[in-house]
Length: 168
Image (cartoon, rainbow, N blue to C red; front, side, top):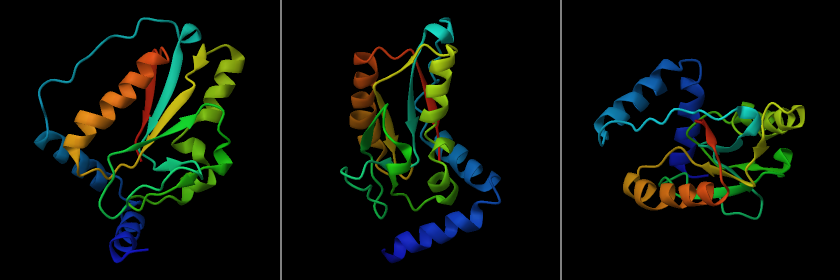
């Protein structure tokens, strides 16, 4: 582990009891990068007839997928199949305290809970593919111009009705 990763991991543990500080930083960053009003589309479909996908910034990946670059930030994503065994996922992220997410990945990637909702009939279906990013992404241009459009294309192809966003 690099010195930067060790510093980021220590800082995330120190700030964990103070959720207002990261929230403030995120809101401040969002204001400085605003590109205009956020588009809004009302959701009118019944959940029991809808398909859901999850996008998380928790840094999850399968064992055979590359780790995220925690030192320089990483604008790429990892595709997580809907049937993935969450206990076999890895987390590569040093910018938040990952201990709870390692104990229960459903905190940030709630596929087990969503599968239960599908079985109960409360949710129509899960998309075949879900997406994980690392939340530390200083390369905003790559995120906006490459990563997001690629994920959106996958979501459209799989006819996803709504996305559950889970920030780390």
